[in-house]
Picture (tube, rainbow, N blue to C red):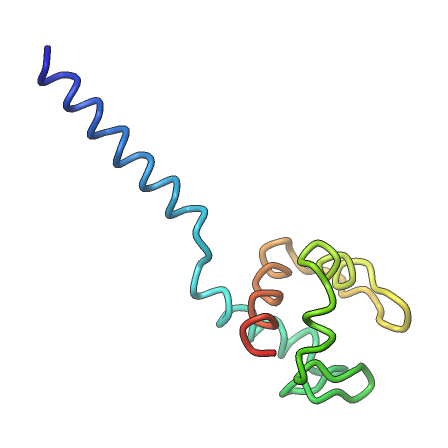
Length: 104
């Protein structure tokens, strides 16, 4: 009987570790986010975030101003003079936000 509980306990620990790993941020998000940024954001905010038709992001002020939920809403729905960015998945929006927070 003791052996059976040991196996169950081990399976629980392994399963818990896998679940926690799934919740951890994926380091590749910033790379994917960079690609999404270049394809969907750089035409207005500049290739390096320096601005253009849209405001500069490279000083970090605008990026720091918004929570993740607010920033996702701006990307998804637009705000003020920024148009919505159509066609992005939730994963792509999360990836570009991770990129913005890491880079700017």
